[in-house]
Image (cartoon, rainbow, N blue to C red; front, side, top):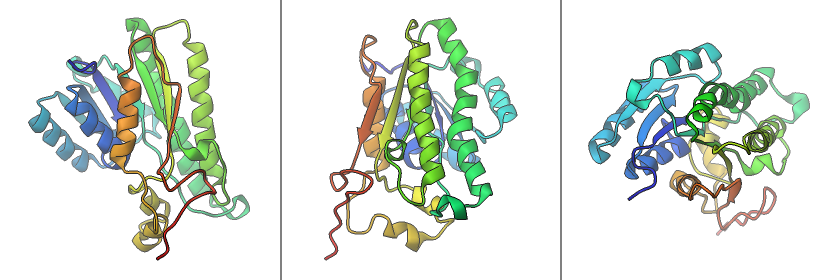
Length: 258
């Protein structure tokens, strides 16, 4: 029997990409799902599909993780059977632009910091106390290779992902005397809507990021997340970095230009 059957998993940014792939992976293991994202109709369609396909209990609601009041209302609106969150997957995140810091737009900085860092904090602050009270739980944060290595034009995005890694480590230290596990999964290049968002809808510019190589997919990252979530209770995968075979670091990428 799956270790996840009967567990309740909350996934932010669940309407596409890594979040959607993780929702599908957890549903296939029999977990109940709480799905959150800004694109509510897309989210509800996914919820209906997973309920039909896997027979799991699924709750979908629109949420902007940047708004702490919205996070509070989101928690208050959870159905009673899905209120006890066992796994919190802090996946919502984005990058904006590729400008050096001295040419950057403050609105882009604020959006990245508010989503990638503060949003993670708001969700963790809201749901971690319940995990501690119940004596069980797992927080899994989606970081990035950009939380380990910086690159030109990614200064603020990298800073937010370095902070995600630091917060993951801090939580692990603070929770070491509890049964709560804390993990961070750091993907390299993943072909999702990430680059389209970064380039503000420029599909051609976004596709150029992955030209000549085979990137990771959302499903690849979901498998890594599932691995973290299904270890025995005495095992915690603290950090897991997953890269495409064509990538060795931020700076070392093999592209087939033929």
